[in-house]
Image (cartoon, rainbow, N blue to C red; front, top):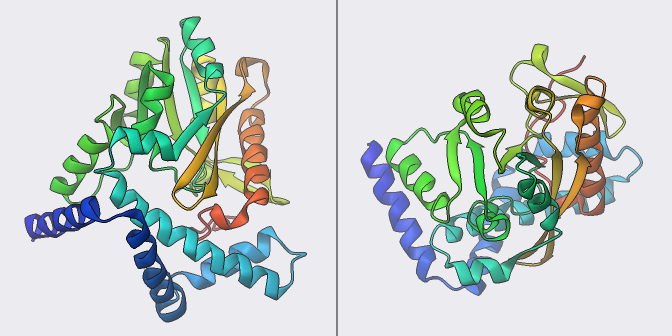
Length: 288
């Protein structure tokens, strides 16, 4: 069954490889209607999250964001599949970066950096485009896929331009080995932590919220500069990524400060384009 699942996955990859973008977005409209209007995938989670984040918005405004969110979600799902076979020229045209010299500055000094990102817009395409912009070693933590054949293919595809993908359980090992070299560690840090006892609690949309402890722990351990990575959709299938410094000497900060700075940056980006964040995960599952 595992191999059959892989064959179906590869059939999907092959179909998307030959499918032009305008057809992909036509299909996205169909998937949007099915997920949102028919199935109502995680609609209660999305609605509850939006009401917590935007208590001043009317029901009509909340529903408008909600509808746009599901379009964003289906676009990203299909773009991610397309991305596995997308050529570098197309990827760089559709995923442009600015201010990446801020990262290279620390690399030139021989320092490693942490690039903190969130689930905003299309975060998936960065695995193949970031090596072109940053040039030096890029290490990306990821959660392995249950199907070992699919996991092997996805890992190989995401690493084709030089990024090193490593499973979350090996994060500590990779930091010990490479943190003091000119390298970039990409941490997607806005997931809900599985263990709230180890969480860093910060203010996020006016509510005490549990954040993963990774940024806090590794910046304090290795005093690595932390850089925020924002993603803005310019139009369908076209994105601009921007790098901005959060702090370059985290050991000067009190416990929890660097995570609060990251959360504040993230909230600022979400408020600009609320439909582009991943509202379908249980952001406020834990309470302090």
